[in-house]
Image 1 (cartoon, rainbow over the protein chains, first blue to last red):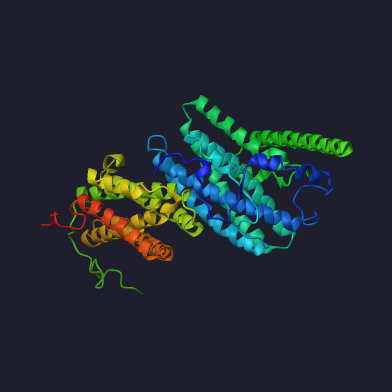
Image 2 (cartoon, helix red, strand yellow):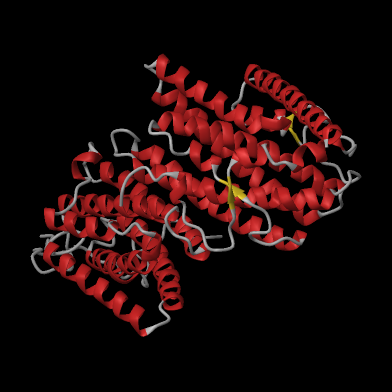
Length: 279
Length: 217
């Protein structure tokens, strides 16, 4: 079997429907949806279509967990013992088990919430971050950026479970949240250990992490304002080893992304109106 | 009041452990190093395969088993210095080149249509041989002097039995036509011949013959 599997070769059964990030951003329905006044984007039980949004997010979590499992598995395989120390591979193998459980939990939660596998699309840019040929960059992209995002997502979903009176959702998200804190700590530890004598490599890894963070902030998905569906979980992030400076800069990045998304939506809306007047 | 000065036997009457065992320290360490090497190659490929397998149930089971074999390799890694091998990497080796060829063949399938070939290699060929090699070591080594290895062997064996059952049940669910029975059979024969040529996970003598019994005078 070859090393370094491209994301296009991820194996799925016929239920899964794959889309790419451009499809989502340039979905022609987006500007029309943006015109609707649906109130704050932050996940809340009183928000219109809260149930639908939470089911969609749960499906997103499920496919994200599959890709996280696949990414950790590939890190066990893609590197020789020189590039990736034995202990790092042990951590990745442990993560495989954790992500495998998260897939199982997510499937059961999907059933519980009334959705099914394949009801929503899958985009594979999470796995793309796990394809970096440098194990340090890969760990920074996956274990710090993406697993950090998972902390935010699970915390938001846990709160949603609490607010909506769904103890099963709250219970499961809390357990997954505990694992994600561990995964981020692994990423932070390995970043420190593998770049202890190579500051340039460390900076490259952190830059890659910022890039991945920026992609996942796209459209203001995550932040600290009511406009962000997913809220930054500062306390859990601190527990996982993120510094306050890192959390501050992530919040700033999120505000920037939200602003860009707003500008894009306004431009698209204006274009729609112009087009409607012309026809 | 308990009588504290009355002598008692060092072993309880039901403790039937005996000296000696089949293996000297060096031989036990050599085997443990071979086990670690094989478990490492196994957990790596299980992890690598997860992304190439479309069957969701198989994908998730392999994710779990990846950790089991990683943990076994960690148990052996920790045991090596206790067996006087202060550089565990020195003994983390395959027993011979033929065993490398065998493991390369186990790890070779990649395409998503080859789930049966992947599972047959692991669950019908390799894991039954782990069970055999570990059981031989467990039954042959000194129950007193090599007790820490025995404890690890028992943990590992419990996983191997459970994982073998998981894998065999997945295979029985996937093999649903006579053609697939033949595919699975061909793959098993091909791999068993390679395994035979290697002599086993710990080389010739994995299950006994060339090892001389160690006696305590």
